[in-house]
Image (cartoon, rainbow, N blue to C red; front, side):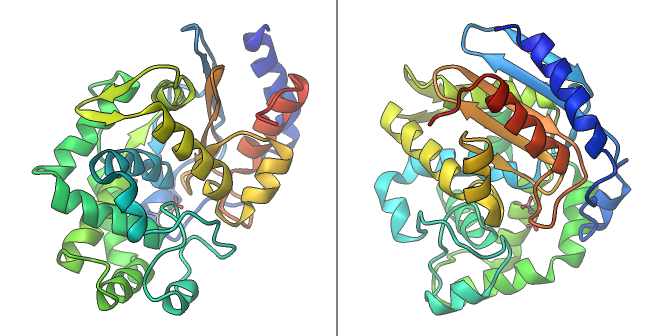
Length: 304
Ligand code: GLU
């Protein structure tokens, strides 16, 4: 498969969509991002890397960070993790409060905000230096020591993150948060603020695609079976309230973020990352989602 040519082809096919959708502006620092970027990178399990356009430009990974947080929590808690967070698609927006109230403080899954806030709490109680250890883990996965937090984005989100503050308070009311709510919020926003480019994201996700052997990175160990299960959650819960549509059109497990990034995997074949900041009404990158749809359509291969 000539992936380089395919990526270039994909770019020319998604170009007519440039201008569709809207950059996330509810986090003031994110609204400053130039909307017209497009980058894509595919790493196959044979170690080949194919990249186009802005694949080397870093952006805010936002909710894609929830995958890394889940890996760390699953490694320390194992199956007991699921006592505090579910693994069902939510069918509501990523920042919804409603379901949480009805279900007495047990978030539907780790990839909605409520679930990821519980992950943040678990990490705060399980790791001595959670900020450093999270970053060390991400850096080792992507092979880059310069990947880091963007404090301006984290702070900007804290100043306007009233809904997330409400969610964490509701979780605390239901006794599903151990730490101080302010500490949990700050750590959660910090994780969301990590900046990576498509090349780094594709490399990092290769660890989830290539689960033929042991997963051991920066002290985090997961079995093949745990990686398989993480991929299942990415498939069913990774794309906001559009996981069904994403499964139908693309058919790969992955995770998107409101920074416009999407990382996805074809188990045992490749990891792919795409970035374009304009989002559709569900919060997924318009050009990014189309690019992945074309990738699995042109190759006639997805996990299905
Ligand atoms: N930090 C963002 C929030 O909590 C992440 C949203 C996302 O990328 O889904 O609203």
